Structures are given as C-alpha cells and as structure tokens.
Length: 111
Image 1 (cartoon, rainbow, N blue to C red):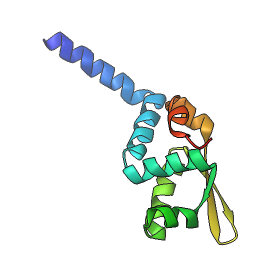
Image 2 (image 1 turned 90 degrees about the vertical axis):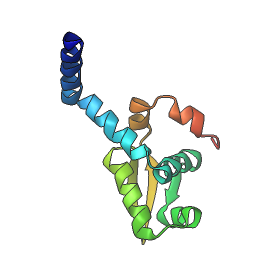
Image 3 (image 1 turned 60 degrees about the horizontal axis):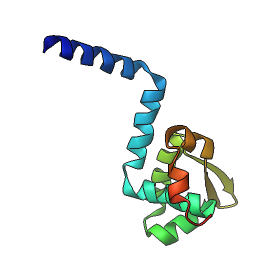
Image 4 (image 1 turned 180 degrees about the vertical axis):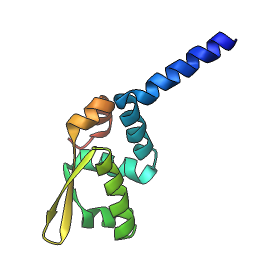
C-alpha cells in the first residue's frame, strides 16, 4: 500500500511540474463557471460578440461580465479588441482545440 501511495505522490509531482497540465487545470477551472461556459458557447455560435450583446443576453452587470471575459482571456480561450466604447470578443480556436478538441464541434451549432 505504501508503494502505491509513493508512486501516486511522484505522479502528482510530475503533473504539478508539467505546464500543459497546469494550463489544462486553469482552462477547466475557467469553464467550470456556467456563465463563462455559456459565453464561450455563444462566441462559437456567433463568431464575435460585443460586450453590450453579452449584457443583453446574460442580464448581468458590465463589471461582472467583464470579469468573466477576462478570466476566459486569461486562459487564452478568448481574444478581445476595443472598438469605440465597446469590446468585441472572439474565440481563440487554436487554443480551444489544444485543450478541448471536440468542444467546438459539439457547441458551435449555429455554424
């Protein structure tokens, strides 16, 4: 039993050092929030979405939605550009495919 625990401990240490594993945890944690998950799905369906459009759909405050978008940007799943007084968001499809290869196929119903 002790040997099994030691090998698990070594494996856990290796995962902790592996950058892909760390990035994977961050991506999955970001998508663990239902609002961020739905924001990503909406972006896949619509291509680009403005901050105002997110507010219309989700009926959350601008700061709350901005926080959710920044979390998605922080893990590299979403990119943004400022356009006048709005922010336009889009999915970083390469990054999404890196961590969730089937997600786009399943969730991009509108394409």
